[in-house]
Every structure is written in structure tokens, then in C-alpha cells.
Length: 349
Length: 186
Image (cartoon, rainbow over all chains, first blue to last red; front, top):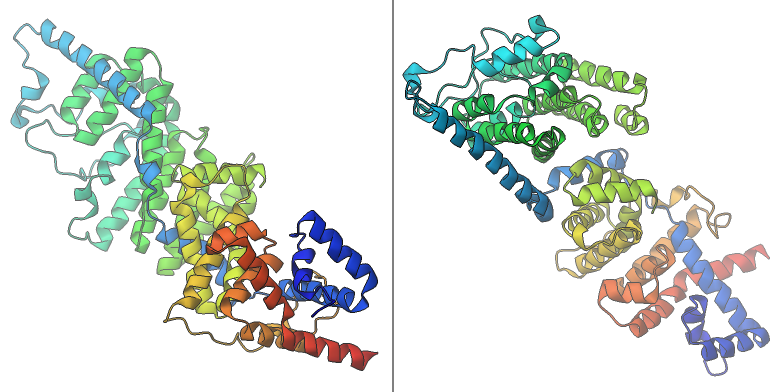
């Protein structure tokens, strides 16, 4: 190789030589045809390697993203609560404790504290919060849930029963599916699951109709929040405290954000496996949209409805799921102001 | 990286799996391509590509917003691919029948010269390369990574990158055939 620059040509090609070395090679190339040809060949190798297609089997790239997604674990940073949530929690706690204290002080003995009401003497189903909600709902008749819909969670005996009629809102859904007990019981029957999905769909439609009423509901009084806390499961109590804090602080947006974010995280972390679970997730996303159709996350949630619907169809090959998926996609694509039409077209393709 | 991708990455960092799925969709072909060129069979390339994205997902907090995501995840894939072919389990197989019969979608530097035979010859030449050289060549020629980036991804020195790249580019069987073809056509 003496007299030629073969070994430095590769680095010269990449502009990886020091300035003085580069100048030496350049001068040599001006005078040496063999090295100039060699340089061209090396460049040709790069071009050839880059031009070779990297093809995959048909359909591979269509399925790959969802395969990766199915393997994603919740991210550690996402599981950590940001600092502001602790501050918000402290404010919420304060807002709940203060009314509770005032309420106890105002008790004249004729009324036992809510926590001590025995289950047997529980309030009837037409509990106060719901009654107020119905009065405010624009379409009370539609807001009436099915009379035969059973409560989905057993109510601990130490607290009053959860009213079957509950306001649609972010406070309700997490408590029903977030608890481990709700996710890992003996497998419900297919019919039960279908009923559950249907109930979710009903609630989504209902919530759409009363979205504005639900916002007014956030102004509920401290007593209503107290009742809700006393009657609810732990998750519901947490969310009810959120509403109470919003009222107490005169800031409606804060609890709404907190609960919406919690609900988003919960739905986003869901990993359905069966068609029925995908259907359930589809309807829960639909309910999410219905609760705040103009909210900042509504557009993405609408796409999630479609995605979950597609997965339900793919998992079970049920024509009804396909029809629902295509209808949801068509509705989205016709929607004025929809932000992700290309993504949805990709799902349909 | 466009504003859309920055937005997606920011959401993914907050745990939004859907946003990350969209990112995967954007970069999957590139990542798979890097993996396939190094490991040389679809099954292994699929494993590597999936693992690259999963590691990227777990490491999103360390990813600097505003920087291009594609090269980052490709470096992860290249590193995984090299380690994969180093593993005893890895078995290098020829690419599928007809692999070289489809041209790249865009005209590359040799687009007009690469017919199916030339591609097969190139493939054979690549197969003969030691895997470390092949990885370096793919990372440089396909991904256009700098020596420093390749060195960092593979845990070697820039000087080693330089020498491996020089040897890889010789691709003697391919260059020999190319020279013969040029003479025959002259």
C-alpha cells in the first residue's frame, strides 16, 4: 500500500480526519487516479448498502406498533405523583376536614354523625346528592338509570349503601374498576360482561346529555360532600373530596382536572385481553368523552374509543364489533374539528 | 424532530402509551431496517426492534426533548443487534428468497445500477463480513451516524470504528463483481 492512501480513504470519506491529514489525502487524490477510483468505490459501497431494501413480511408494520404497545409497562415516572398532586391533596383534605368539623359542632344531638349511621338505618336509594342532580339535569328522564341495574360493588356494612343512582362524572368510574378486587374476581359470565358494557354505553349517552349539569354539580355544598364521603367507597370518597374542595375553594377546574387526569391514567393503563374487556374499555373511553366533550383530552379519547373498538373486533372477530368500530371511525371522520383524522384513517385501513 | 413528535414524546414521558405507539409507527421501519441488516433474519430483527422500542420507553426520561428520536432509538437497536448476533443463540440465516428483488422506494446513489443480481451479490458480501464490521457499516452508511455516536452505541473507541469501517467498506466480493461488471459493460 505504500504510496497510496487506501487506509485513510474511508475516514476521508467520512470527513473524520484531522485537518492536516485531510489536506494530505486531498493532495494525494489530485495526483493518484487509483486512489480516486478507490474512493469512489468506497462511496459506492455505502450507497449500495443504504439502497438495499429492508422489507418485512406483509402486514408486519401494520401490526408492529400495537404489539409493542401491548408490551409496555407503566412508566416509573408516570407512576410517581407529581409534586402538585400532593399539594392539591393537602388542600382537598383541609377542605373536607373543615366542613366536617363545622358540621359536628352544629349537631344538636338529634342527628348522629354520618359515620355512625348503621347500615340498617341507611338512607333510601333516592339520596340527597342524586336528587339535587336530577333537579339540575337538563333531561331528567334520560338521566334516570335502569331501575334493575344492580350496584356493581358490594357495599361494606360499616358505611351506608352507595346509592344506585349516581351522578355521571369522573368520580364514579374509577371506583368501579380501579380496585384490585374489581379486576381480579372470579371471572364474570359473558352475559354479565355484556350487561356491564351496555350499562357503560347507557351511562356515556346519559353523561353526554347532562354534561353541563354535571359542571353545576361541582358546586355542591359541603354537606353534600359530607354525605357522599360517608356513603362512598374509598375511591369515591377521594373523588368526592375533590369536588368538595373545588366548591370550598371556589375553583371548579382543579378537581375536574385531578379526577379527569386520574381517570385518563387509569384507562390508559388498562391492558384488556379479551373482546369483552376491550368492549368495556371502549365504552369507558366513550364515557370519558361524554363527561367533557369539549375538554382538552376529548379528541384523543375519541380516538381511543375507536382503537379499543378495533381491538375488540380483532380479538373476537365479532361482526357487531366491526360494525361499531367502523361507525365510530366514520363518526369521527365526519366530525368537524377532529384533530387526528389521518390516524383514524390508518386504523380503518 | 417536528413539533408533532415533540408533543408525542412529551405525552409518552407522562406515561401515554398511545402517544408512544404513534412514535413507534413513525420509526418502526427505520429501526427494523437497522436490525435486519445486522442480524440478517426477520425473527431476530423483530425481537431486536421490539426490544429497542421497549428500552426507549423505559428510558424516555433520559431522552432530551428537542433532539431527534430516530437516531437515538436506532442506536439502541444497533447495539442490541450486535449483542444479539454475538449471543450463542443467534444463528445467522440468509435473507428470504427474493429479498434483493425489490428495489428501495427511492433512488439511492446507486439506484440505477442496482439490479437484483447486484443486490444479491452485495447481500452475500455483507454476509461474509464479521458482524462487528457489518454493524459499523450499517450504522454509518444507512444511519449516517458519526464515529462518536457509533463508538458510544457499541462501546468501542472512535479509532476502532474507523478501522472497522475501512475494512467493512472493502466488501471485496461485491467490489470485485462490480469491477467485472464495469469492464463487461465498457
